[in-house]
Length: 170
Image (cartoon, rainbow, N blue to C red; front, side, top):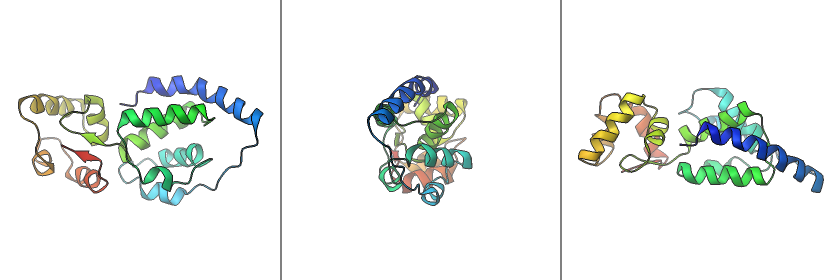
């Protein structure tokens, strides 16, 4: 999972990177594509998360650069660290919201191999359901969405949206 501690650790790096970038060259903010970010956030119902993504990520990127490429949480952590090195900036709250948005809308999860926190956050299930998924996959791997969708505590609509985005693997 993209741990909350990572967000706090990135805050210091973001500030240092931003100061370095500002000192070395002028930064030209690109127009953010808030409409596209909101449209892709149907798995994250808090509009403040989409607004944070627009405020932090579209300073240098168009929304299509990240909305079109779901990744695993480890890869998103690398991207966030890289962007902070380039001077990406945001408040602690904004960064926390960016992590929420990416985890729920753009993170690929393999139900049979991903860490419990990734399964919990991306599938949007409780701790108990995530633990039950972990126990079940140890006995017998899940074979597909139909089987997972019948698992107690799963929201079929979330699974269908993740599958349509190619964010759900087995």
